[in-house]
Image 1 (tube, rainbow, N blue to C red):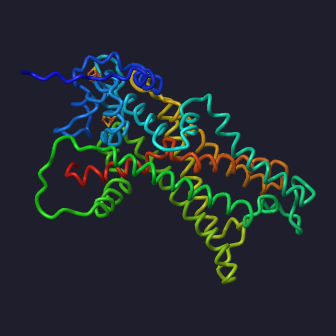
Image 2 (cartoon, rainbow, N blue to C red):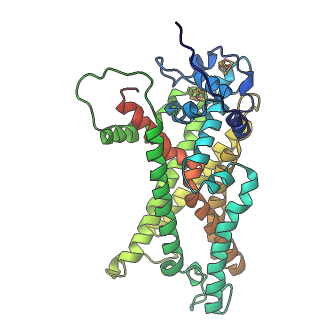
Image 3 (cartoon, helix red, strand yellow):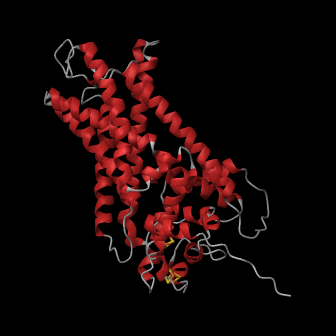
Length: 387
Ligand code: SF4
Ligand code: SF4
């Protein structure tokens, strides 16, 4: 006697995923053109048609534990060819957004991150934190905009590295890293291989696969290339932002490391503010220029998207907006300092600290988390024998 499998649709989930960017999913009539069009989809377990089916049936568990969500690079080829305008690329992005929202605690931050209504709360936390630091230090210094003894503008007069910036950012960074680690472990436990793959020969340990992913995919951005020549601006923009972050992270590590090591070995101390011709400063400015180039390319691409095929969600706008805020406030605070505009320099630097804090602290719930979650998924599929 034939067995009947009951499907338990989660209608709240369908509503939620439609609100998160998958509003056109009901237009899908499951023709599978999208899965054929996708240049990254594997032949033995193609996407994104199956995800369209799972989403419209409300199969939350299947979709939220789907490793293929993270293999999609949001190129939009599937959406360009969908005969029904069901925007499968946006559905994949919406499903990832829902993972960001619910993967790690505190879930309140995930909730705030999911809509523009939560933005004031996300801004208020660092705004109050850095305002408190500013108020306390200005009380000690006797001015909101104090100058150093030699008359120069030195941000450390208010936002003193040893007692404010370094401890706050160290706690924030490692806290976010820990939450990200917990989220990644949870995500990996959810992934379940579809069927089984016979693996012949010696089996590599996971860390060797991780290394391969970093070298073959992250460093080269190879998958962006596989998405087609017509999407070249995406690859260049993404790479420019990625490598600028790498450069700026290296500069931050050199400055912070030099500062703390310099307390023991004075010869290694890195004095701030650095002179414009100091090599580390030159590196920082190269990173800043690269960041602007990448941001312009990414923003232009988003502006050119035809909403009939692909649209931008709040997650996309939030991430671009915060990175723009970091870049613009960083550049302007430097300019105002060089122009000796003390009020503007401190005010814009305060905004810069707010934006940088938002970028790091909310990383596990924001689209920036894809960097870690996607690497984990790519590593996972290699460990089960899929490429
Ligand atoms: S999303 Fe479009 S292309 Fe994909 S199965 Fe549905 S109707 Fe077909
Ligand atoms: S957006 Fe690109 S990578 Fe993602 S499913 Fe569509 S075609 Fe494939």
